Image 1 (cartoon, helix red, strand yellow):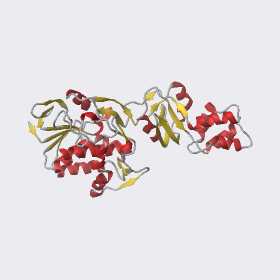
Image 2 (image 1 turned 135 degrees about the vertical axis):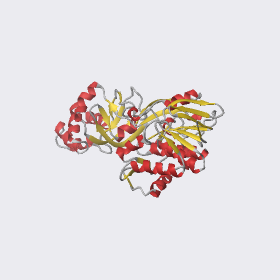
Image 3 (image 1 turned 90 degrees about the vertical axis):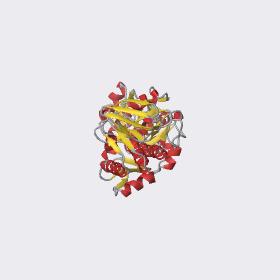
Image 4 (image 1 turned 90 degrees about the horizontal axis):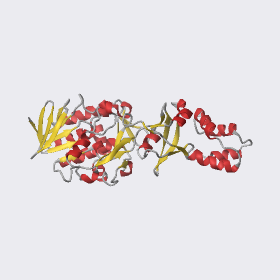
Length: 386
């Protein structure tokens, strides 16, 4: 039997940072991880470069049933705090677009940083520790295939349902339910869309074509790149809006942000599809512009029809059949209901010593390093409270 002050379930971003902060404060910490290595999801993030935070992190970049919940943790562990750690370990990094910070070399640098900090804080990491059951008597008892662990505090950092091939399971939600906590219904987020048969046959042979658009759904809008895939739509604008989309709803896409296409056609000497193609091609890639016009050209070419068509250019309505699901989702929206937790410490209000952090909680960041910042911030909040 192993006795510790704190048991952390999951060696991902949130779990490791929590363990480091608790270890620095003299707590004896054990991290139990079912995989054969730590930080498997960190390794594939940001195309292998790990988009470890965002300079412009604000509470508005997060989705939760309680929009105020994340504020406290985010205010007390900021991007600057994690950047200081990165610089301390002399990891070269760069800003891509919109405040997104990436490692110059690879995501392994962030894993090495976390491993090194764990060593300094005397954190013990137990790999390939599949958990059989969790009980609570006067303390928490965690039984694994390799032995029994006991501690007065248990931190659940087991992640969501995204990317099951990386080992994602519903374990954290099951544990929350075991202790009587409520769960906000989960769904795939930051995920590509699958188009219906008709739209797929119209556009998906253009796979690989991308354009800057504004994607809108449920009163939210994102201006970034959209990418056509073999099955539907992806790219940053689409991934962002997918987190707000509900099945059965349409999305609206502005194909020509800040441009008055109809006006340019009105001013031309000849109004026909060839003119429209010429005008449109200055905005969209040629193949996509031609295809879109084939399916949506104004007729007749009078002012009323052009005005109606202009609206369609700026609000192309498309109804996705579905998303690509958890297999392709970067994160899981929903999770442990924040009304069950303290926003300052991440501890359960009704189960003393039980904490939930990271993706398992109903806080989901936008694309661009925000989910990492939530992992660091929620992990730090719990680690310092321990």
